[in-house]
Length: 213
Image (cartoon, rainbow, N blue to C red; front, side, top):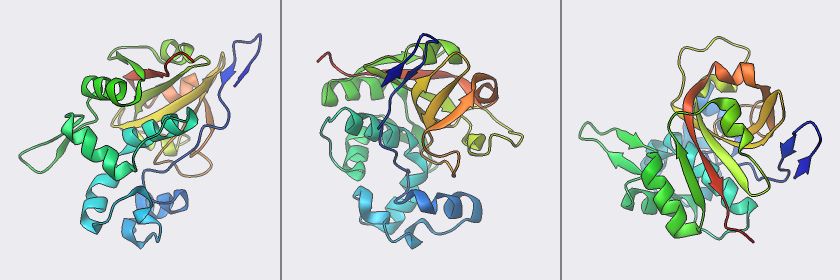
């Protein structure tokens, strides 16, 4: 982590993971409608059934952010597919009668992350972007809800929210983050000004704090 008199806090070495098997395949999957199982690394996250993976991988941005945080803090955990099983058991995701999914649901997630991994998770259902970014410190990261369109920040967006990204740094003007469904150069260790991110930001998020060392 680095810090300066200009109120910069930036964690370095936070591992980046795509919510699909390989970061190199994100563009083809999200922009060209490629079959996620055409990626030869699709089983890397513990999935074994193709249809199960195809259904869940687009929905696992939040678990992917959690995985990055846990590995950064050297907190042991199961593969992502097993994390999903536990998340379902704790109602972090809820299956709907129409076959869809509600989730990631913040408060069940917070309780599970605390009991399973010892994290302190503060749920912030209404919070300004600069305020939540300002909570990042030596032991704290943040997850915020943005539009998945943030992968193309120079283009107009039609929505806010619907996707989660991991904040791991901030200065007076903007934030650094990992986007699990990002496309290079807006994929890992992305820096964008607050004014740009605000266009995509849904006004809610969570802070993740590891236990005191």
